[in-house]
Amino acid sequence: MKSGSGDDPFAEADTDTEAETDDQQDAMPATETESPAVETTTQPDIPYKFRRDSVKQDRKQRPIFIRPEVEERESTFLRNLEDAVGEDVYKTDALEAALVVAMDNPELVAEKLREWGYDWEQSSPSR
Picture (cartoon, one colour):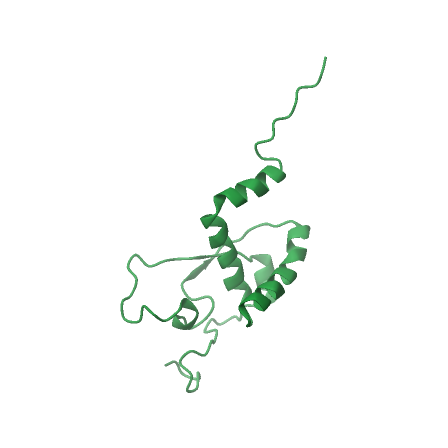
């Protein structure tokens, strides 16, 4: 148990010197989990949320660039997600989960990219 965490070994506390603020997350919202080559076998049944000491543990920060209309949808997405799971959700967890779901469903991502103009053949102008 870490110092200052009280009697709850599952208490979430950020051990980084700088706390993750919404402004910092907004600047670079996407993250990527670095999976160890071999999972530890000491406590495999404990969910990821409770195995970590902070939301940033074992993650690399990855900057992405998003358009304003995508950024505007983020707070609604988070509220809807919290309603669906029935508890508060860290933005970092939510965005990483969204990325994993997208990676598990490339056909859905391809459909969105086609809406954005990928796989679009521009017709030749008539002469």
